Amino acid sequence: MAKALNLSANPLVDPFGRAITYLRVSVTDRCDFRCVYCMSEDMHFLPKADLLSLEELDRLCSAFVARGARKIRITGGEPLVRRGIMTLFRSLSRHLAAGAMDELTVTTNGSQLARHAAELVDCGVRRVNVSLDTLDAAKFRAVTRWGDLDKVIGGIDAAQAAGLAVKINAVALAGVNDDEFERLIEWSHGRGMDITFIEVMPLGEVEGQRADQYLPLSQVRARLAQRFTLSDTPYNSGGPARYVRVAETGGRIGFITPMTHNFCESCNRVRVTCTGTLYMCLGQEDAADLRAPLRASADDDLLQAAIARAIARKPKGHDFVIDRATARPAVGRHMSVTGG
Ligand code: SAM
Ligand code: SF4
Image (cartoon, rainbow, N blue to C red; front, side, top):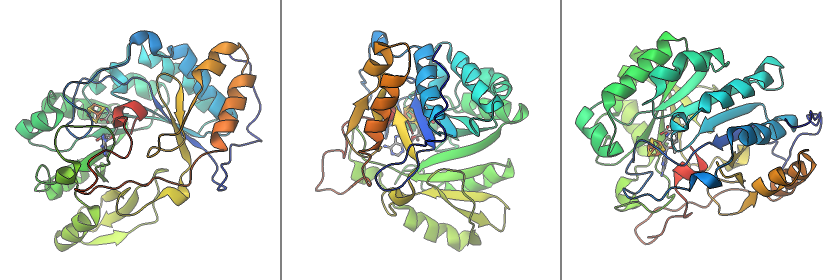
């Protein structure tokens, strides 16, 4: 067990004055789906021996909490396919109980949610993000390559029955789900769930052209405004989404627009992978190895020093480009490595 540190009076602040209060942790690069925009069909996953143990992941997360991280999102790959993952939620929940953290949450594809929903609530999780790009079962299977829509809907049912607030995340995909946005909104809002649309980002090699998948959300919003009465809201869920309220449904729509509107100026987050690699920006290659300092000593001094050095070089922002002239992805790793 890591020694107790009281460093929260000394929060992590990057060179641009942004306090790092939000940690996203990809606990596995594996997944039971192969979404076409996220992974190639033939993925090579990390050998299990390279992964941090759940105890090591706890220690890593706790080092960030000690330096002022108030929110942790467990993600992946598909976080709920990692064996024993509830142990990590359970152990991290102590920071919620102690008031050292405000929120523990998860982004999931929903396939395993039915069997974990009640325990997540028990571990202090109050909100979950479920990724769902289409309500058409055949299309869902095509987008995820392997996914079963009924299982995901069952997971959402179970999550809501357990008392979790669910937010739907949908990647806007040209020619795939762009005929369904209104239906997705009405369905989500009808169930009391917010929905956030995400622009596809050029992360990792996938089959096909990113330019064919990419749909600017500025266009989507303009189209939705013809059907719904949208009004801007100051609501902020702690992430990069900008929200509008829909008068007709009473629900909210979020837009995550890394491509059309760069939100880096308010970035409060960093990401750590299941091998203990810290990425200071989703859209840049620069990274810091935290596994070596974590394993080098039983106390956290080396780890804390490595974290502080890494935050001191957090870049100002990403420079994503999607166009036909730019064939290669902005960064080589897939979204499933760093987590959404
Ligand atoms: N497996 C979980 C899930 O699907 O929710 C968590 C990990 S997944 C990488 C997190 C989010 O990233 C999902 O909402 C997914 O749709 C999104 N995503 C994956 N690849 C993306 C890409 N290239 N551009 C934009 N969003 C992407
Ligand atoms: Fe898996 Fe999530 Fe990537 Fe889909 S988006 S392949 S569910 S990690």
